[in-house]
Length: 121
Image (cartoon, rainbow, N blue to C red):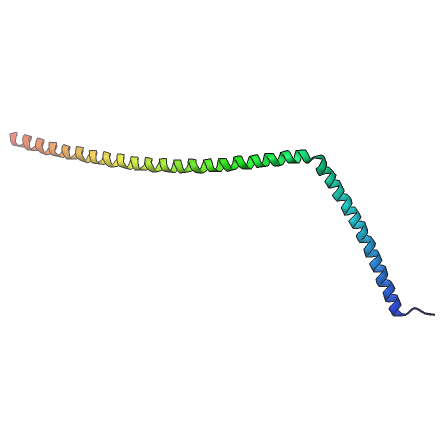
């Protein structure tokens, strides 16, 4: 009586399948144990988790309001700077016009003084 190579190959494949199956069973058992531990931790801290989530929602809502407020403030600031720039430019134009008028009057007064003093001399 002898063992054929076919029977030996089937036996080796069967043993490999048994070892891999046992290993998978051990890994799954360990995995489900870890999941059970995680679930117990979450169940123990469920109220804390709910409070944290509620706090996060409130923080997100506050951040949303802050962003809207900042956007509105930026728009108002932009508008204020725009009007300030326009007012400044108008003031500069008015000042320049006033200086030109003063220079014109000074030139006229100088010409009149020259004309008066040069005839009398």
